Figure 1 (tube, rainbow, N blue to C red):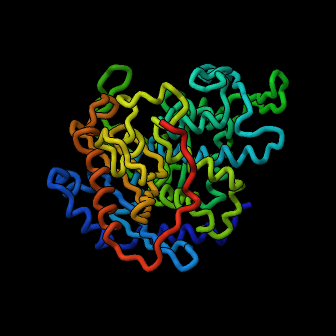
Figure 2: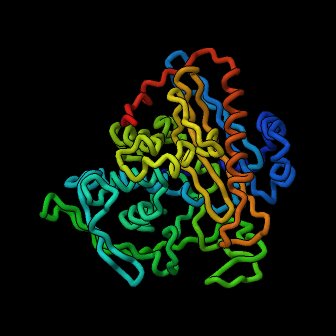
Length: 414
């Protein structure tokens, strides 16, 4: 059941932040960045730059006190959320499992083919068991941002349940419309494949194919992007229409991360049916580095460096992240958009903060040509933004230092 007062609270937050001027603190950070980012800073509207930064102070009982700053926050300005939407889908999949008594996240499963183009699966060569499971899909989704893992969790939940659940939780501007990396029609994306879960050879739970019925309106602006796009190898001299794409504005992304990291942050957050073990599992998967994975294919440091999925602070680096720093996050990168939503901890220096950002750079203004300035500009910008906030936090006086016991998780050795 939708909690009306909770939704009104979210609407109030969105309205307030839409009307607020830029935070002088964040504006100062942006203006202090290296001159190589002048293009982004002086053309922040064209680059669709948005930043949300939350300072965290602690009281004498280690309870967090938040102070949030925004820069160019535009709740209805469209940007493609790319892989950042995988995060809420992972959370909702864990929640759904808790409503099915006979299965858990490690239960092997198979997925059956549905409509043409909706292929099934009965094995997973990257899994240590060789079999698919919700645990392994969530692991792949975070550690290497695997698109198929997202698609399978999308099918497990069903499009209606994804959207209705997020709305019920207060994320009312979000619209999840489609799978990733496979060209499917709107009608195909309404359907989800049938699932079976097994105990050895015995079927213990079966979920039939579903068809979404909810109407997903277009609740955002500026969804025509670029001047040209490539389709089927042909250049089409018109902007790419994103009106049928996924959307989750930056405030709701930031807010969702904050709610998972600090489960008591939101009133009535008991609406999320997650156990303490679920939260610990999520924290580990959100922060694990590819070299710490037990999946050998992800241990190739040349392909999956520490910064592979940690754009804030390390997106432009091949260096190892120091052991005292952990980043709990989900990144996204597609169509020229680069995003990150991160909770950063430095155990040694007692630093913590939340930082979310999106930037769009596409010099030739052509979509789907795979020619975007990720390495040259976007990723270095995200890293530099993270570093300037981190340096500020290192110097910021705190009356009570944080205690991070909840985040001493124990990671697999190298």
